Length: 255
Ligand code: NAD
Image (cartoon, rainbow, N blue to C red; front, side):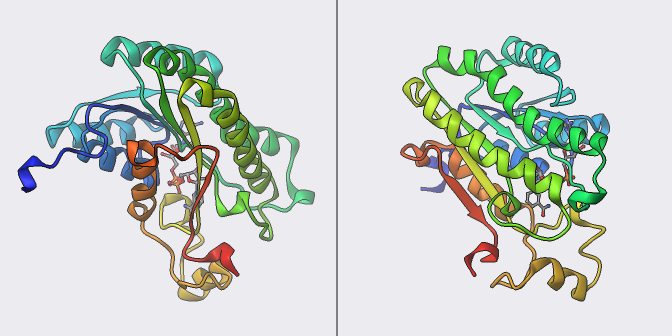
């Protein structure tokens, strides 16, 4: 029976931002493995092309589009290039994000502006840019990557937590506005995940347990453990989910 199994996102076109490394890369690879055609974005052109080459080498279909998600104009250009290449966009994974470990009193205006530009405006513009294509196609699935730091506080990452909290509510706003168009919009809230973003903080067992703050599974996750949630939200298996928060945190926010 195995050869009769279809991919879980067979025939869909998915755009993943920040797909060069870390979770975005794993999301792109898993969606491609499950039958999607991929548009991979990043500002790291070398890494982004590596992800695309890997998908194409395995027999998938992927295109790299390098741009900064905080630019509205770049989004319009990218979506038009994606539409020229594949004719539709069914799934948007707003994954690109940047981290800053500073409390409020140490954060400069420029640092705050940059975090909000990438983590909030980037998500906002991504939604704006894909809406016409999704409306024309009769629906779609938008997945906005927030964080456990968009649900609960932790010391020393004020601008980042501000941005991820904003993504949580932007997600619900978009879900209510676009449900009439059959566009589902859900957020994903990863806990502590081993990626380049966290490599300088998950250095020792003590440092790791300190960051985990008692998360009941007491370990960080590998990126793919979050990709399975993204795949589910991208697929039609999650057809009755919109405006929801999928928490993938090993119990971090449960206690
Ligand atoms: P990462 O830093 O390992 O990778 C992020 C990727 O996004 C990089 O390839 C980077 O070049 C790209 N990027 C950064 N700014 C960009 C921009 N302006 N335009 C386009 N691409 C850009 O990060 P990660 O750990 O894989 O995190 C992915 C997402 O998950 C982020 O939104 C992050 O905030 C969130 N998150 C991460 C963790 C974690 O523990 N790693 C936990 C919760 C949420």
